Figure 1 (tube, rainbow, N blue to C red):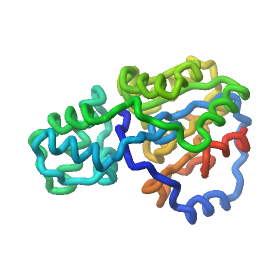
Figure 2 (cartoon, one colour):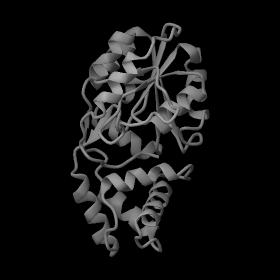
Figure 3 (cartoon, one colour):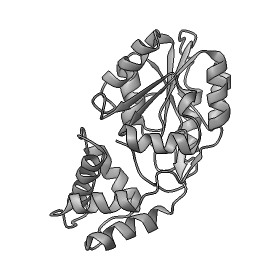
Figure 4 (cartoon, rainbow, N blue to C red):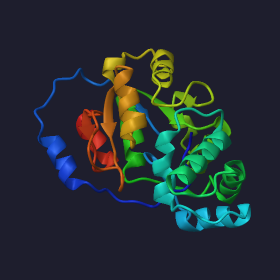
Length: 250
C-alpha cells in the first residue's frame, strides 16, 4: 500500500553504500526496460509528518504511541491488505503492539490519518524528472507501486507524470502487494519485456529490491534516511545516491 507522508529525508548509510559499490562487479544483461516505484522513490510528501500523525491521533481521540518513523517501521509487519485503509489499519495495529499503544481502534486511526493526508501535496525526489526522461529515451517504462489507483493517481496527476508510464500496476489492488512477484510479472508481461533486462528502481529493500529480484528483474536501491543498514540478504544490483545515477546504469 502507499505510504502517506513520511519525513522529508536525506540519504544515510554512506558507509553501507560505499561498501556496496566496492563489491566485485557482477555481469548483468544490458537494460532495455525500466520500471519505477512511486512513494519514497519518485516523490516525497511536503506535509510535516509529525503534524499529520499528531492530527490523526487527536481526531481519533487516541493517545499518541508512536512517531512517524516508528509507524512506518511497523508497516514491515503488514504482508497483505485489501486497500489503503486496510493497510493503514494493520500498520497502526502493528505499531500499537510494538509500542504498547491502544490497538482497539486502529481503523479509526487509519481513517483519521488518511483524512489528514493531502495526496496532492507532493514533490519530486532528487533527479526524478531527469530519470524519467532518460528512461523514456532509453526504452519502455512502467510504474509498479503499492497502493490503490485512486490514491496514487492523485500524486501522479499532481506531478503531471501519469502519462510518463506505459503501464501502471497498482499492487494491492490489481495484484498482491510487493514484495509478491505478481506485480513485477504483470508489468513485464504488459511491456513485453525480458525480466533479466528490466531494471526496477525503488527505495525499499524488503518490498522493492526483494520483490524485483524474486521476479528475476535487476534491482536498483535509492535509499532514504533510516533505510540504511544490513541488506538482510536483499542485495541490490545498484545503489543510487540520486536518481541522476540511472543515466550511468543505462
